[in-house]
Image 1 (cartoon, rainbow, N blue to C red):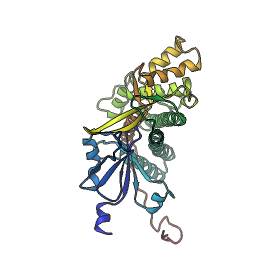
Image 2: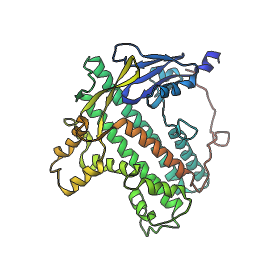
Image 3: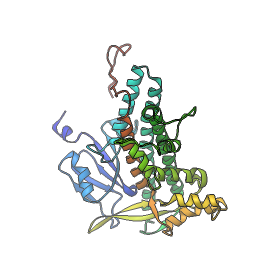
Image 4: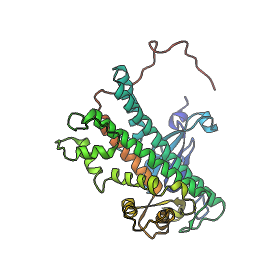
Length: 372
């Protein structure tokens, strides 16, 4: 391996907030895409391969994740890139990937110990972490496609609210993320009920497979210094992120399906200031800040007499008529929280994780190396 290859082991496309990208090939130069609003190529130079993340942080640019390209097949599109969402938790920037692998290792250890129930739930949690991880990339790609289309049409004006063919796809990707995130949430609740608190909560003959029933069972239990149950109590409270996630999911699934709202959903042209002389174009896809309030109004029948009025709230969020947050930013935050909660749950596993090892004991036949 050459010294240059050691210094720059792969090319990277950094997914940034709002659909823009920072592209770093096998060199110290990093270029933003699209061009700046001033029509210039935005770029900067880094001194080392790992310095790119701190450099973007110093520019106050949020990172969603990274596509790594280290093989010609990835560059050609024959195989997908090595995608990793970016969250700085403890001593890692890639917690979703690492915790997903930890759960798969728990599943492997459970299989070796003939614990079928733990093998099953461990494999499902590990798989669902990967699903949510990829769902975030889908949202980021939807943002990027919409942003690039707007720029190519020379129709990008900061502050403009618009709807095009990509708007539906963007909100559809957000809805898919919300649904899959709540599946992971419920898998973690099932694990907690079966392997962590089975001896202290009375489930009767009913198996807990969702966060709501688990919340009710643990609400009256006082367990000193149990960090996992403290986390669940706090984040399933009225203002907790688990509660907010559930409210969003219930809103888009039961009340106002985003996938059917193409005539009511708007995107917003915005900008990301990188220095005093330049700004990057970005896209925002607003979602209402308080889904619980919307659900309450609907259940009382105060405002949402028909489907169209239910969807209007998303238009109001886009127009700034009600408080809003960006869908991509929210999804990235939620995935980081789910990774942290999944790690807390993994630490409660009755069987320690074990890395699968491939050797003569479990490989049948000859091992061949394929050259590309």
